[in-house]
Image (tube, rainbow over all chains, first blue to last red; front, side):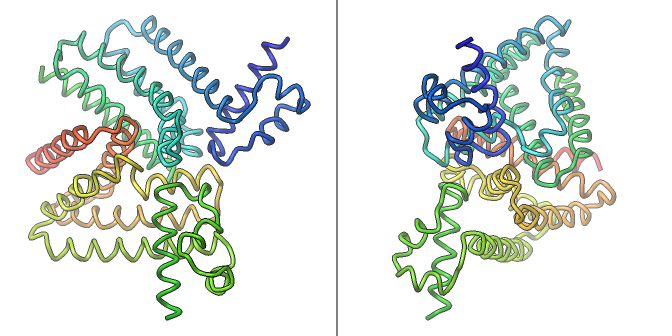
Length: 189
Length: 189
């Protein structure tokens, strides 16, 4: 029972940090949203920074699970890279409203000069290393990490612009362009 | 004298919003930073939202001036697009610390569901329309706006990743890749 209350707090905080921003979401706001007593809440977390830490662990775990699923789903490294690109489509409506959860949290923590910036960046690193492994399996050897970073940057830029202009069509168009880019990379090996 | 105090407040708020974030920067923080009395400060601005409004006007004006300069500096539309791409190099150290001022502000205001989001997005629109004019002059006609948005998104993604990984080399590499992309677009007209 204790575990599930803790998990509930983390899940709600994860959503609130994403939708409202970390700094803008208060400790009290999360407690109110989860609808438990202040005492019970304090039993699980003493500060908002502790919650942030748990939220990042939660995101790291969710991301690893997703990457493991893509390893199963995708028959080829190319298909697996397309799984990554496709999250822009799958999460389209949320991206248009709030941007990318990973990119916007790291951007915010960078400005706050927050001690957890590196830890939040580790979510990017999981994607980066996984993408680099796919490019490596496709034979790009020493270019694999650069290509992984390129795909990550492209997806971040698409999310930022789609959110700024509230434009879902732009996501569809840029995903098509990114898939085309991937084909060109494979053709030019 | 009144004008210069107002201008000073706007300039400091512009920096603070960029470096610390809009939500994290308090009205009192700006007043303290400018080092003027609370009364004098209130004479110019009644709320942080009023300051934000003035900061966005300031950014719109600075952006327009920069675009006008690029119109003079660049002999060709291609050279002018390269002026845009080059700001990633010129502002490298700040981008690594705080990301892009335009992208991070719109991302933050989107989460805050802030009334000034559209106005902040107008800075993106200035770049978008200017870039589209360059692509149009290069003969891309109905693809001009899509190419402008593509370049904007690429630059945003580069800024976000460079800031997350604190990586200046990545900016240099991706700027080279983006310049190469521009050459390929021109060659395939």
